[in-house]
Length: 100
Length: 399
Image 1 (tube, helix red, strand yellow):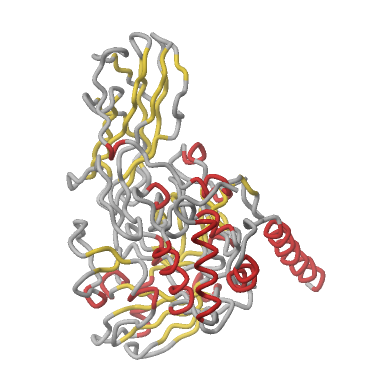
Image 2: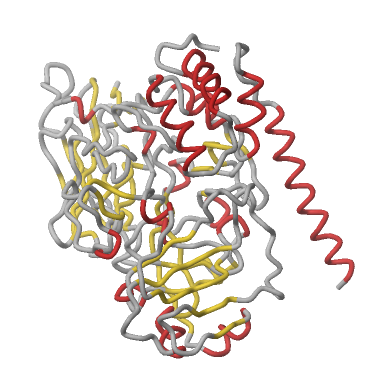
């Protein structure tokens, strides 16, 4: 059984590596606040969530999403950084944001 | 299978096509289209990416072209990013809570040996399937049509476990927890609850098998809850604990998420202990259908039969009819229904369309269940984008 266990652990590692390799290809648009988004948001989820939810959210809706991540999901983001994150998301992934 | 073809009263060119706003699919947000690439997860055929971590992947519609959805094509949906690989030989299920007389713990073998084994064919549909088609768009996982599948599930009845442990009359909800969890302890663990009457339903199962195989890891191995008729939010994956509660479960996932505005949809099933003045938990699926065999703008030959196929389902009453239109909803013909695999299952349907002359033929399908409930032509908007059963409209171009 020992060899089977090793195989199993190996399979898990492969899955994780594939997912990480895929995630590393996600590139958010350049702009002020991007580093904050890549630092905080990526802790709990891949950044394609942001891309998929665009470009239809107003500032108010992005603000509500960021607030939900902090209040409901427990993201530890200081208020100043949260504001900058909302600025970035609205400018780059909000209504009327430029493509790519 | 017996095929039926219908000649169309209205020819292309010059026909008045009904195209109210609700009939024109809004389409996915452009950002969701861009990231919606086909990716191959372990044990799966290529599925459409909606997010990488946690993994959310939907089934391409052409792979839904059968009554039973193959395990390898079945959609994947997780809320939280920590998804352990559970060793089924060491896994245990805890059954307890304040409204249970005798707590118990079971291995997978204990469940298989100790209780009657039951099979049910049932549709598993993410509450948010088609959220991406909401008009206006709403935030969330931007699903298209394919966050749905149908499988033959094998397991034991939840009620047999509850009865063995002595369910007290004080029980108000039966709560489930799975092995998945958030990255930080501050993230609310994904827990759900159902009313005792639903937990005691003879069709509510704890299943280890899906279409004759062990549950795939990404679909909740080693054991998941099967709540036929209800949306998949209650079908807890990687189940680790069942608790009989004497007060309503206090969690974000019941009190805030997975809710619909009160009075907006006609439900028979309600979780009264979780209702408030404004909203109520989502419960049974609305009657719905998907056209699986044709694509928008597909070229077809005048005078030749084009096979139009699809699937239909509802919240557990069963499908009575599926009507198909090839003139944008002006006239309808009943399609042939496939084998009846039970009232919780997909029902396949098919019909042949033979265009009499060149032109556009907007094809629509409309399922009706045994309660007489049917699909809508206008979206019933709600903030989470649930229960979208707007009839599809796919234009065939005859030449």
